[in-house]
Image (cartoon, rainbow, N blue to C red; front, side, top):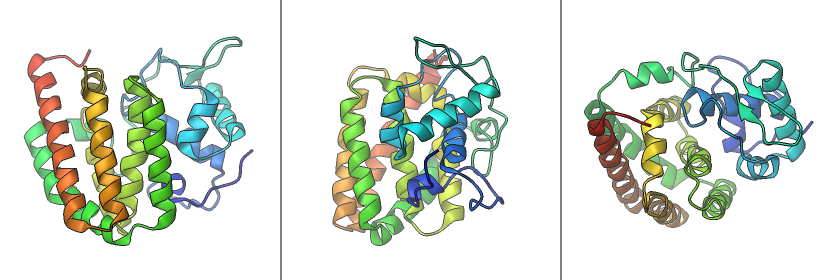
Length: 250
């Protein structure tokens, strides 16, 4: 079993009000995978990325990933079979709390309200992150950008990296409550977001946004980070609006 990595990406998990000190790295990764399922980033029947790929994105050992998958398999959340990739079981985890609220609660709000909230709060959060972010987090962001590049056009794999990327930046703001709140807003209509990322050119555009965001963070340029995130959030809003208008995430 892997040991707990003290990185902001790994140690901050959806565990409101519960001490992290007693959690193993395997526990943390199991919860991360549960969140991906709860928010429809991973859906029933989906094949999980390989252990090496998940370990690279989540900054833990393959043994830790394997242990987390075994934990979830024991609960029927993930189906493991010899000779093939592990798959998400036929489960509905949308009721579980992600950070402060459940995805069901967030999805009950209309798109305009969520977008306005993200512009109002998230831009403040990432602006603060620009001033406070440390070298270790910047290094992890660079690693996640590389993982996104290597993931090619696979929307699911891109979004797994995308969540780690966003949460790492939110955590860097220094206010865990604001970071949790913005993380919940990030989960909005994730089933539509996954479909949006499957559209031609979508991953390439988001990847370019992420590169610009990291470059601005490396300069600790608050205004540039806010501008890059505003551009990114507007893209998310417009693509989600188009799919909502079409009426189906599938």
